Length: 523
View 1 (cartoon, rainbow, N blue to C red):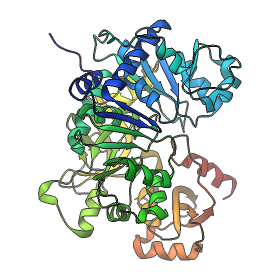
View 2 (view 1 turned 90 degrees about the horizontal axis):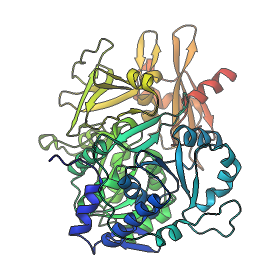
View 3 (view 1 turned 90 degrees about the vertical axis):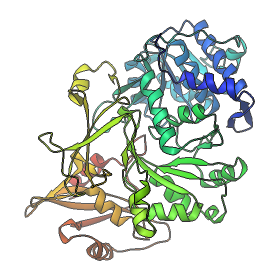
View 4 (view 1 turned 60 degrees about the vertical axis):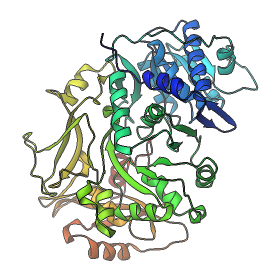
């Protein structure tokens, strides 16, 4: 008999082999794997009592919390589909996503009750609104809260429901920066094999204590919910990213690893708490966007641990590549940091290619640019109720990412740009990411974004929007001179715009579309 692959197998194994081991730390709450497993079963029985069946969607509007982590197992255990919703979404996007997914149940934290109250009459399919933490006033919420729902349920193991490993387990919506958000369907098989790949890449063990610094609704975070459980490690939840709190938890809980996006890394590196020693830390993993070599060096120096970078998408579960250093390539000094900051090599279970416009693999010389495509056990089942968009993204079994990269002779990828963000100046291709990575090495710059703007002479040229660090000053002329020392002449931005902040989407990505519109209004 073939047993369906599902991440539920991870929790079952760990609860059996490590029943008394600390599974989750969340504020004052501390649960062993035995206790956590019982709560997961209670959640499953509770959902069954609410008449939630296989294939139905259960949504969560929650910051990082042990209750959301329980949903990653309790929801899919009954064959239902888990939908973690970004807490920074606009009311319009919330209505769209909850209606588009046909969500039946919405678990939400108390702080989001007022927002949902404003839009609840527009929600066509949600039958049950359940508050995850206590509420002081009921208003329109007549149902029991989360803990009351669990207390009504038994703790007996919920019977196996998963018969098809290719059934949808989790649903995540893309940021929708260029169109309506699209629901990405990830299967039990996707999630099981993704966790196995990440454990191999990060060499996870039962001694690992993972700090969940990135929201679990974000592509750079949700995979860890399975990989750490797989090995019997400990999950430490943090609801909001504050450097002081991060440093306290690393020290108190003896954290061994956590994930960051570059913006978070910059916040930590400029915080006073960075001067402490963190002897238990062994790994910081960076994702979300390309990382300057200097940032990797600074993180490893400040925290005294290894730092890796990776690449992936919501549609690929998410991690495709990680900058694992091959044993014969281990180098010292700047060469090591340069390699560690690369997009990396493909994880087991993935086939990754970089192809030109004719679908032919580019030469592996670290210079020739092509689009990343992948054929993988980790590629999504498709977009929710969007067969045409699915067919456009997945062609003859290959998923086209829309990301441009080079490949070096050792097979290491390096992201160059999004396909739509490449700048063509007088026939020369310019990577906006390369220019951005150069600019952020300037000590006065906090963050920046580079876009293409029209040019009568060259067709288009780069323009840089920069945010200056507090208590720092720098002129546009100084920035141009700085670029002249580090970039080819044709790559130097033709203009610089110093701004207070950059527009960002709900996932924290800089929205270059808005910057292009801003430039059109202010040429």
